[in-house]
Length: 66
Image (cartoon, rainbow, N blue to C red; front, side, top):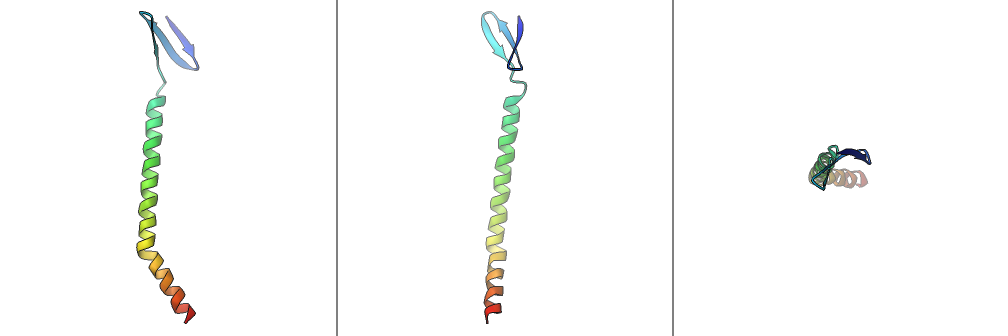
């Protein structure tokens, strides 16, 4: 017996209800991975700014104030 619930294919086999999430779990996992990657890139960019550019900015401000 097949039916549709909320757009997902559902099958009843031996009294057990089996639902297909149409790939939602995989999509959620991919979205979580993408979010984690974006956060990692943002941290790396921030660290690079703090290490390289912030000292240069401070130096330029000090020189301009003299």
